[in-house]
Length: 332
Ligand SMILES: Nc1nc2c(ncn2[C@@H]2O[C@H](COP(=O)(O)OP(=O)(O)O)[C@@H](O)[C@H]2O)c(=O)[nH]1
Ligand SMILES: [Mg+2]
Image (cartoon, protein in one colour):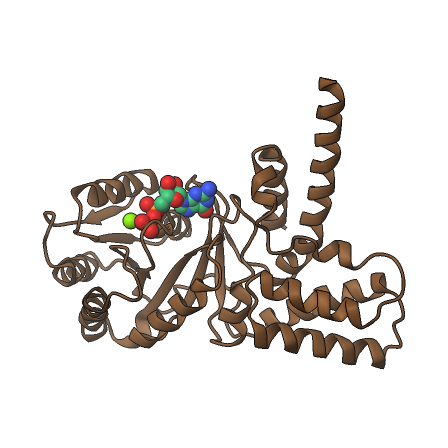
């Protein structure tokens, strides 16, 4: 419930600023489709179209609509509003069926090594800081590795997060080999018998071959030292990312099998439809969701709440429309 409460709070908080963002939401118009008269073929086409527009992908959108048609027939559903719960349940079910979905990382078998990956600005460093605090609060000894050596500022940024979370940061000077930093950080974990290592990395476009190779090298070093069983690879994905997110996930997933997606910035834009094909087709679980810039703003992903939020967001849109009308009325 914490996820939903903070989501709602954030949506309300940003009510006005979000007006523009609303147009970008993947759920735009989906809830309004489910009102009124009995449904016909046009309804199914429209639903499929809106899912595709919402970055769910052509094949998956088609599969969702086919499944719904089937369910509607089986249950003899005749109104669109009855279909609404079938739709929400279907989305939630598809997500929940992916192993690890919504499950925070466990430190049952320490050391746990997290390798953060993703494009520039997606929220890797911020998420690393948030995770460090969560593990530290569980009484775990955490080390952060500053393997984004491209810019001096990147290391400083991680050091700030380390201070906030109260954990040690292992860094070298800018321009150092990131794999060497990862190795150093691992040594620090060993020497201090720490439980968790979180390795931050530089943003990289999935299409940049040499940068992806560099990431593979970091992974190889950690795999050699810690063993694959202890490593979890994390793709941090900005919720605003559209279909390109699927390509990103697929390419990172080829470098090393991804253990998780963190869907960041869900407070900014409640898009995020792209997690459906990532979860359902690539079988990568969404484990956490970022709901703000603060160190506490990371919650376990909840597929049920995520699916329900589709309808909730439309209600927020209606609130906004009413608010807008009231504002305009006041101005006249
Ligand atoms: N609103 C919001 N902003 C976020 C979230 N996660 C990260 N950010 C912001 O996104 C920007 C880039 O984050 P950063 O962690 O530096 O991304 P990196 O380049 O992947 O390491 C920063 O301004 C963060 O404050 C989130 O969940 N919500
Ligand atoms: Mg960073």
